[in-house]
Amino acid sequence: MKPIRSFLFVPANKERMIDKAADAGADAIILDLEDSVPPDEKAQARALVAGKIEGLAAKGQRVWVRVNKSAHLYDYDDLMAVVQPGLEGIVVSKPWGPEDVHTAACMVAEAESRNNLEIGSVRLIPILETARSMQLCFEIAEHPRVAGIVGCTAKNADVARALGFIWTVEGRETDYLKSRVVMAARAAGKLPIGGLWQQVKDLDGLESFTKYDRQLGMAGDLILHPSNVEVVNRVFTPTLEEVAYYRGMVDALDAAQAAGRASVMYDGEHIDIAHVKTARDIIALAEGFAERR
Picture (cartoon, helix red, strand yellow):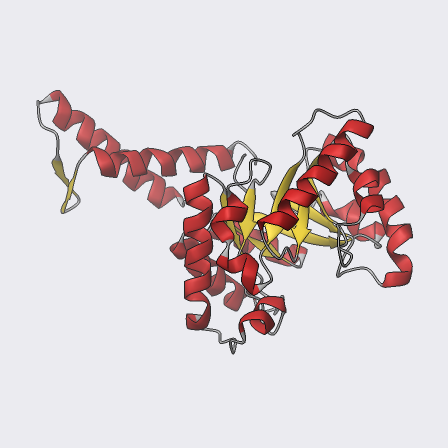
């Protein structure tokens, strides 16, 4: 799946916000039928989302939907309404473990079948919000329908309550969780996604938070407000200076290999093919994001 730097939540009961979402610049949006919608508005929100997906996708917007969860299943009516052409995937909230993800995958397959979609075309991204799901993050990530997993460490939210940690700006208490999510996702060949910065008006804090997620290996972050998109996209995009540095590295090793050497000194460092493989990945990532502008 194409990388996602910014994953913007949009309340599914707010038509004006949904209509503006495609102009926010986020790589993907999550039309949220769960926490963002009051209980007595969920049926109306479901119908609204069902009517918006195709139009948003036609504008080139990648669309995901977070559905509700009952005590035993993910909401069948939600899935039947939103699994349709133009939907990239379903965000799975609060799975207890891989068995919940398997159940969600089976329900999505049934919705695909009934709505005449190709089986397997709609992907899943579980948000790991229970202690058990965090412990079993690799088993969740390796499900074939899963495109990525989220290690979300918002202040005083589900993960903090599940693990009993005290949130700090520095984030030391969440390092282990985030690193487990990154390792599990990368081992399964899926996207590791971080977040969530709740102080949406504190853009300096958001930038520091996002830079640390990138440093740990996250591919992108969940975000709550359109004003946060630019910061998150910028942080997760290799800079022009980075790209120039890595292009120079590739050229330096190419010249060395042409002269019969397998390594070379570049910018004061010893490099070989392993470093250049990393360089090529970063250049390709930057070029992919440049094509979206």
